[in-house]
View 1 (cartoon, rainbow, N blue to C red):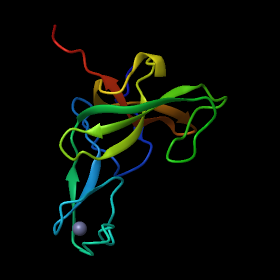
View 2: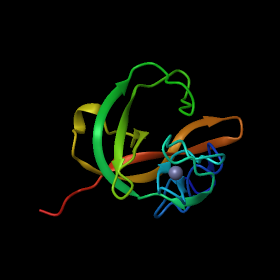
View 3: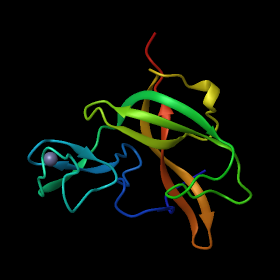
Length: 147
Ligand SMILES: [Zn+2]
């Protein structure tokens, strides 16, 4: 299925280069803390208090930290088709930032197919379809390690 004319479900949360998409976050220029989604007002590190945050593309890869199956529709930003089809939600520790972000697993990848420590990468895939057409969301796809 082509996703070329699909639009991002949420503007500004990820780059829309479908070959190598990345989540967009913020980095505090004072203490280098990372935030996703973008934090624009001030650093949330209580020992920092910095207020200069820059927009950065986060690592495209990371390690599975935990995985769960969503058997009911989760709250926003997860928007799902109706009727709801269960999918796996993965908590991934990003390679460089060591920050844990949540996302859906790629279509067809179930919670039982993933385990802590598995390497995954960010992809864009259809998240749901509304009156305007297909909407893209970021998902995590297992990386096939070279044998
Ligand atoms: Zn800071």
